[in-house]
Amino acid sequence: MEKWKVVVTDWEYEDLEYERSILEDVRFELIGAQCRTEEEVIEACRDADALINQYAPLSKHVLDGLEKCKVITRYGVGVNTIDVETATENRICVANVPDYCMDEVSDHAFALLLSWARKITLADHTVKSDKWDFKVTRPIHRLRGRTLGLVGFGKIPQALAEKVKPFGFTVVAYDPYCTEDTAREKDVTLVSLDQLCRRSDIVSVHAPLTDNTKGMIGEPQFRVMKKHVFIINTSRGPVIDEHALVKALEDKRIAGAALDVVEQEPIPRHHPLLTMDNVILTPHVAWYSEEAEKEMRQKAALGVKEVLLHKQYPKYLVNKDVQELLQLKEAGRDDQYLTNVN
Image (cartoon, rainbow, N blue to C red; front, side, top):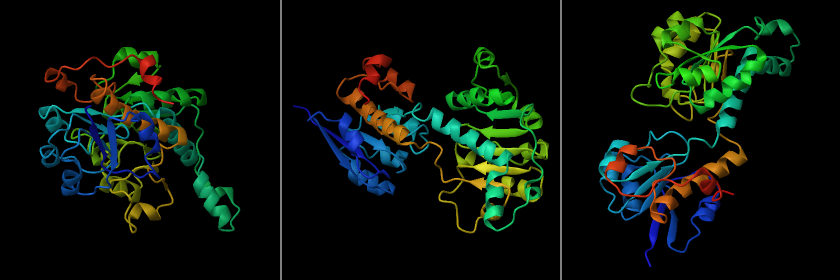
């Protein structure tokens, strides 16, 4: 009987209970390995049939050192830890979990929006510092009639657009991959990035981190924004040029920022953002709920099961070009898929 070695390269959970609940077949051997470096990954995973990855680096050097790997799944949406091109060349399926936290992230972005707009954290800090004076929150502007600009218009920002509409927002979005039909269906206007920066009163960033999006919000964009604008980021820190952001805040070219992600995580202790009253910071928590964590971990494990046990492409296949090199069955239907997650 064929037996498959599945290595979790690294994780930050209490156990691997949810992964084991999916890979319950006796042919799976699930191994946890808290790898931090490339060499540690190679040592732990050289003879693995599958990897489940969180933050450990899966570079070309690492992937070329894997002798049997057929599939890599990643906890979450982004796959920036994985050299996807090399994975494809090595006939390895790469899968993510793009739909586990749509409500959580859109809710968090909206919470940051409301908290900043109503100066909630500033007011709370002021009251707890024994000062009862609404004037410290000035200026606060009415939200109805304001324009929200969404950088990226995938499933999460689409959910956010629906949630803000009852508050009277006009919503515009920049996404070169979004169709006019999708935007029209969501009652959102597609614009260029420059137009979005000029028109928006609030900017919310939802672009994935790629070579093309790294630093896409930088000094040229801050220069054309309204002075009362504030920017929210719940995607990836490096999508915003952090040096340019700090400078724009210091020079009062923009009013503030609400950030769940930063370039270096955890944020360095003496980072200037930590001392700014017009900045709200949360510790990359937008994705999290108990339900979302369970769903993400089970679906990551399910991607492994689909390839090794069912000999089919994972539902959330990232590197679709690998289909030209492999002969697996098509991914199962949604109803079949969801019965595996409980």
